[in-house]
Length: 329
Ligand code: TYM
Image (tube, rainbow, N blue to C red; front, side, top):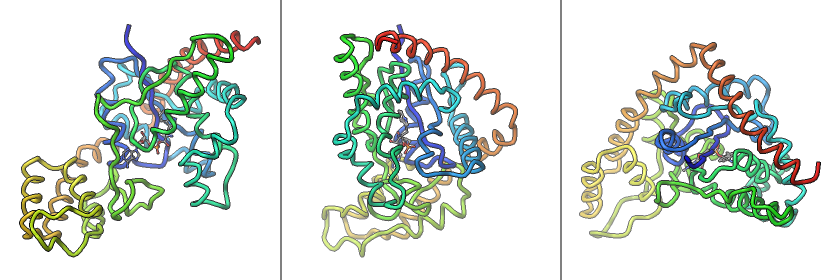
């Protein structure tokens, strides 16, 4: 029997290289060998109050990004979260055993409290229970995600165990984060600190559907330092970040060339950035064209979403029926 895989991405527009290398690349690699559920987490995005037009637009874009990256609806179940309302029922059940103290200690919640003090809603607080409900809804074994989701996965395991203990069952599996045996990935942004992400600022991220000129401009503005002053000196964080970006889009020879230049103090960051920009453009080029072709065919996108929804609802309903019966309904 194939193991079950599930993962999702919030609809914030085109996906960026962080989403791709942290998650989407693995979705594509897993679809042949696992029973895969990949979805667009549109309920989750309501925590930031998008307008209906924005929500619709961004959800379609993520669907087009998924398909452009190589997800095949014949091999995996591809769906939009809000098309499978069973998840909200499981979210309610899990919330009954989610405690205020543990939710308040979640790093992503504390970050949001700092970043958007004017909008600390209950959905934000219980974001990890909705995410656990997504995962447990299909009783997933593995969840391909980037490093920033590690704590959320830990909570999904906590809620699975808690439910099993409370109802004296072994029904829920304990889902594991997954990256083919490697550490989970964190792709840095261009601003010299933290991770690539849209909420960290659009100039910090490079998107799969982004135009070449825009990529060049952003990369040339990436933060650096004044350069190495002695041979083989340790790279500061901002420079490590640029090298990490180079290592995901450039050839090993290119990375080795700039590493050597850094180590013998002849590096010119302008040259490194030019190369990085061109390699990012070459990497994203095929996505750009495919995304725009896919977005042009509304009907085909709707069909993919409708067929995925049907498969996902069937799997979800089985879980809900079992859970309701365990609870005593
Ligand atoms: P989201 O939408 O912020 O990101 C989607 C996926 O992309 C990964 N990611 C990164 N990986 C490496 N480096 C980066 N800079 C980077 N930025 C983003 C994230 O780790 C994630 O895997 N809560 C989730 C969405 C979600 C979900 C789920 C995921 C909802 N329910 C159930 C898995 C299972 C989120 O906000 O990811």
